[in-house]
Length: 407
Image 1: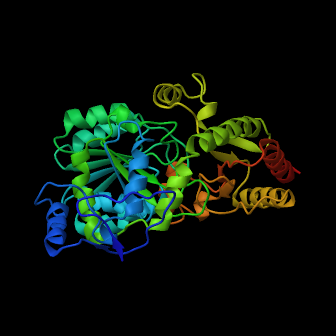
Image 2: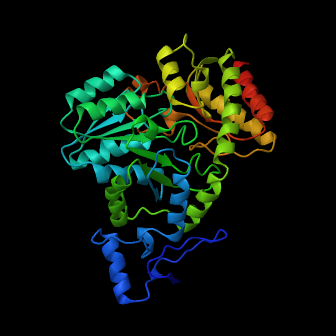
Image 3: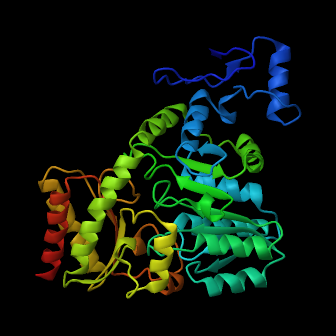
């Protein structure tokens, strides 16, 4: 059992992982006082009590996260990105309220709002949040019932940007008490700063770029105002999706290289996206770094004003169907393995290893087919998370795969 000084907060020294599930208080009155603080019945210093309420390591990495997210006042860690989203929704929404949700959105988020929150009387209105006219219509039509506007930008997997500032301004003008929540996993915290654009809450799958090494599963919630975290914190205390101390330690380690990794991967992705856009087997490349005032002026304008970089997520429509995509994936895997790199055909993203997936049969397979097709998630779409391999090798590997399906 870990012991701590009453009224203080233990801080790991020299990379210590504190694995104790409970923390001794020193006296019965001190433990009672800690619970009064935990329950908001008394103001006092935050202290460790029990692993489900937080740990030495979770508090340490939460402090570190605040140094990386511009405009954040409070941070909270979770056992997964979906645990972070689910807990936030449970904390903020009430039965009878409306959730405005980006379309398309990550497959498990889609399942959560469509099949789980609906059971509790929460109506979800799916909207292409990259289209401000559609957003405005949905917000005005549901203005008195909206509890949360959930924006995933760029959207997964078609890499569409939403104007976070315009949406935030609209919601604050039209709605009384709605929250603007942004899933910033694809670009942040380096290339997009939602709090500076008016968002109330930012969510990450820490499994992705924040962790960066494909060796953890975790989630993060940050709020613009410290008091706004209270409801989410209380919900986490009760439901218990806490990030384990070992994962907290690994996440804090990874934050030290976050900027270097994301910049390197983004630079590599820029070159690869350009090369793919020029190949005859490619129908279209979806990548912010290829936007221009001529090919998509609205998206280009959002990118120029909202983002500081294009990131390293690329989605590509190949000329063909599912089998063409599978052949491309197998060929890319073949080349990378021949060069001594690891497996690449897998879900997830944001790690130092390049990963590729076919969204229609994997991450978005649970989305109704009609809605998948309407959103552009077709059988010939492949999503690539560009890793930190030697850029020249990765460039040749993708060129090899494209040439092979063209043969």
